[in-house]
Length: 211
Image 1: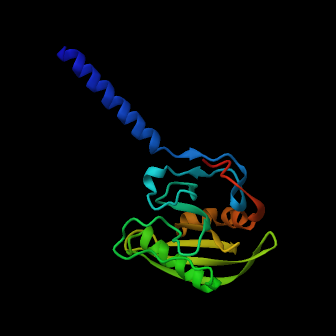
Image 2: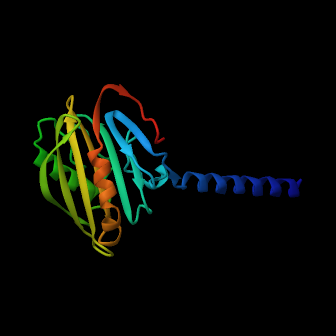
Image 3: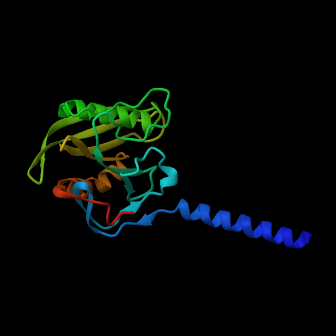
C-alpha cells in the first residue's frame, strides 16, 4: 500500500512538472494575416508567442510575441481598448495604471503608453521617453506612430517603436521594445514592416492565427 502511494505521488509530481513546462513554453507563430477585433496585421516568420504564465500584465485580448525571449525583446499587440480602460491588466499596482480616454490626442496617447509600460513592465524602475511622435495612416485610418527610449536601472537600455489608431472610440496599439543596440538593431526593420502592414476591418472577428 505504501509503495503504491509513493508511486502515485511520483506520477502526480511528474505530471505537474510536465504541465508547468508546457505552460512556460514559447510557441512558433504561423506567418500570415491575423485579426485582432477590427485590426488586421501581417505576421512574418520568426516570431514566438510568449506563454501567458510569464506575462501577467497581458490583457485577455492582447498577444505578446518575441523574436528572442522576453528579456531581450517583446512585441505587444493590444486591440480594442475602450474608454476608461488601461492597455495592460492592472495587477493591483501601488500606482494605478493610466487609462485611455477617447478624447486623448495622439501625443497624450503616446505619453499614456510610455507611463503604462514603465509601471506594468518594469514596476516603475525604468524611465520611458517618447521620441518622434508623428502622424501615420493605417489602411485609410488616420493614426500615429512614435519611438521609445527606455533607460533601465540595470542591464542594457531598450529602444522601441509603436503605432496605433483610434477606431470606433477604441484604441488599437502595437508596441515593440528591445535591448539596444543588439536586438533592437537586429529586428527593427521587421517590426516597422509589421506595423506598416496594419489595416482595419469593417467586420469584427476573433483572434485567428495566434492563440
